[in-house]
Length: 426
Image (cartoon, rainbow, N blue to C red; front, side, top):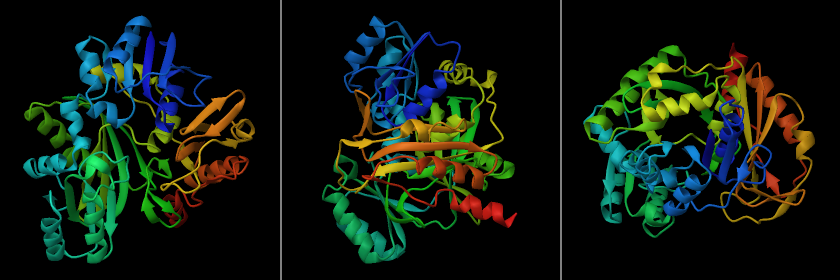
């Protein structure tokens, strides 16, 4: 069969890498793709916001299945259009994608269906938001309601920082995403990512991971789209996963169905494991980036039948087999990220860096000109390893990374530090 993947990041590269291994594949297309995908897929210049263009391409190339990677096309309703054209698609419709498209919607859903989450308020003006902050105190979490590329969350340590965050967001820091705010209590615990595939009724647990959102070592500095991850997350043992499913995931799936917007696709639950147990921080309606890279490295099953089952309502008839090994992913980003950065610097020695059997280098913000790979984005490369322990995976990933010659890039040197501490205690 012919498959089209929508997206251009490290997440989509890892999905393409996994999909390309399926014996069901005839031709794999990626739109628009990046500088590293050309060896496994045909990169095509399609604007995913132009739904007519996507549909026309699918007709011309006899595309039988579409996998939508990023959140924006889902919120914009690309899945609705494709399904309406009878093109089988993985990813929720726009009505269900609001779980990520509006943090306020998700918080209200949690309140209605008794899903554990932080206490919160929703605000459309600064004075009301600041009054709430004065009452609650700091630290406190300020969130732009809409899509902000993973950067629309500010953890304010003081009331003054919170006031400044409110002003910045309402003054356009995150564009239209910040026309409304969600302000919530600061949860204390360990943050973790839990993934579930659902066909709107049934679920298939699909791995755990721990992301590193802050730009600097020791989890300092501004939030980013993610500077690295590892999987599985040691804090998510079988008992914690069971609680998460029963207390958070299943009530969400049932709640969305009861609201008339059944969710089909991947539910990515960002959790805080507190003294009370798992609490929902937020939902994403697509695979995480950089968590997906780790999941794809560990997944031993053919992913294509699983995705198709999720789309057609038979997820209860398939299983996912996982490696017992640990995967760790380190992001290389352009100097200046998550602020302004320069483009089109050359990256050298990628082939040698990725030569070990347990190393995968997934591209994100790159393009290929002739034989040269140039950096074009903020997050640029994902060096991913698969090893016996987190400590080994970390060492292997950094050994590969240190062979890459790219002076214009940087990376965190402590990815996996929580898990390494867990291992050392054992």
